[in-house]
Image 1 (cartoon, helix red, strand yellow):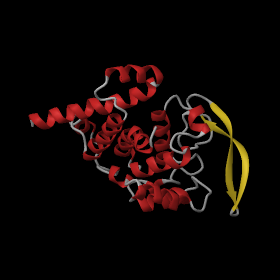
Image 2: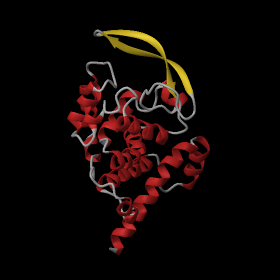
Image 3: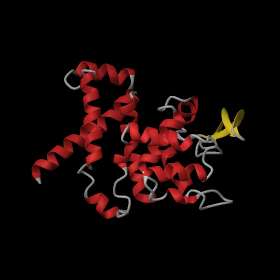
Image 4: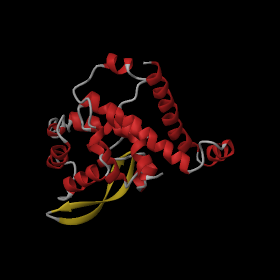
Length: 228
């Protein structure tokens, strides 16, 4: 999975959660990139845990080594991390954590809600999410390098009815992500070669399932544009 494919895969869930919780999608995506190493970390592969959230998840927990910063020094230790059934479940739990905080301090991450991406990156660190002093700047660098702030749209729109009414018409960011995904498929020769699709379905069924929705929704969007 390329970096753009990773972003395209998690962006819809990040934006959907932003509309419900006001957690900036750019922050969610940047944290997922940083914490999971683009979905390649052992924790993500074994537990579908994109954000390094500790504790017991919907599918249990797994003990993994981790690095913490104590008084500016790195300390290696083991910790129990949440296990999820899917990446979407991990993203939803991340948003819930920011929205609800912890038992001792429910508002610890509320400085993130509805904030611009630079403020959100600083406030997530100040809330205690990470101990790395460079954590905010690492997130900001990712957001600016990959233009993740383009996903921070419609933060005040929590209308389920409006969202349902426009479900078939893609937002600008969705269209762009879809086109990038289609370009990726074209480079692989998958758009006009049925035999390659069959082989890809056998070799990488999960990858095919993540790519097909972009084709479908982009096609629907083009049909919608022609009829409006």
